[in-house]
Image (cartoon, rainbow, N blue to C red; front, side):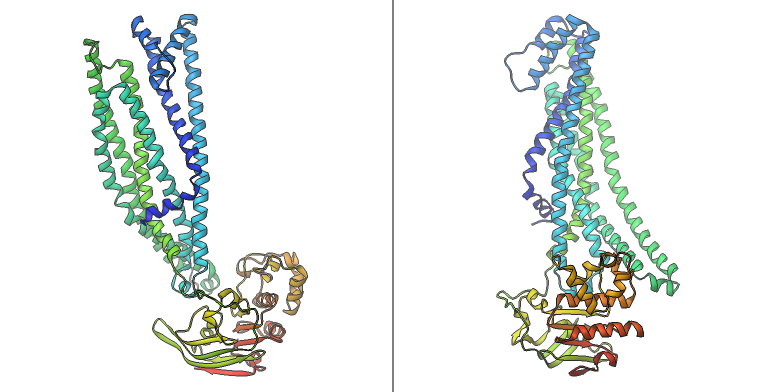
Length: 587
């Protein structure tokens, strides 16, 4: 399916909105046209440009029929009646009321159609954004290691926003504006077939010129979105690393980087703007040329009609005046179509970036017939396990057995593969060689959620969220009881400092726990692991970034956490591994 086809396919489940939108949009178009069409009878009657017998013929209506001729004749009839009974002044008041009512109805139905379109647009965009997020959140860790976070965020925000514009533009291109043009053309044909056939020659010319302009926008649109993604990524890195930037007096350096990227984005945007804005003035200029030509051709038709009143296809002055007004209104939807096509080109460029996220497949997936592990009974075993990252061997021939209740410490120089080995157990990555088993079952055959439910992980970097203390401790456990949260905090040596916070357990700790110290953040991470109550623990450098005082509190919390659990511990400090049953040295 084409990129554009995929965008439209997202709207199909919400087809219930289409009938309402079509009805309201058509009514808005019809009443908008009625405002203009009523001018011809008004000028004809008020300025007495027709003979009485001609007026009588125009006002003659038969049985009811749903046609412009019937309603036009009815309006003539009413105008003549009001003029004869109440005079021209009253007739003007009557016409003003009719036109005002028609304008009110036109705007009312325009509003209703826009509301319906807004509902559909909101639902479609929510569906796209949710699908992007759900798929991306399920991807393997290796994907995030190879992608810029700012680029992913830009796709989910800016690019999805462009798709929203594309959706609106599509409705304009394929229904609203064409429907407006068709309804107005029907009126123009009813007014003068010759003049309307003449005008149709110009539409292909206008379409060709505009299409040549907009088809060049897509490439620039892709460059624009990629540049914007780099800007978002740079902002994320700078604001997240502000401590380092200030420590290295790097403000000027990062400002130059940012200025350079925004300069590139500016140049791309200016190039796009030149092409994008060219369509509207060109279409407007061509429209004016057409109107001027119509004035000449239509004027000749009026003159012919004056000299030959009985000729076919004649046109009077009032008809030409209204014709030109109605035709000028066709230019607006024509320009809107050209602008919408430009928007669609930009949106397709963004959609390609978004669909890449949707189409990305996780490398870590469940077995077709996965095993559900309810508990951990005996051991974790590594049999000839190897791992290669980007063609570089990281682990080779790892053979290890971790019995239930044991603490196994992994030590070695930086880059020896300690964290990689630990990451293989919860299947953040899969080994490229060998098998890891739990209780004799290869973990690649175990249902992923079932596998990870057996494990608690505490890393060097405390991953906390911009929420309350309680919700961070009970992360992903919405039904957790407050007494259980408090008990977990006490075991993690966190209760005392939590109670000193302004709102205790209901204190918001800021982005990434920025309102807390490093030791406090780590103890909350431990409390979160305790709350999960897993039989298997993975501790990755959990105390390496702490000062001595904080380490003492955290080490005590870790000791409480590790009681009666199977633990895989990565550490440099002796205090962390001195009670380990096995110490594995990796190089």
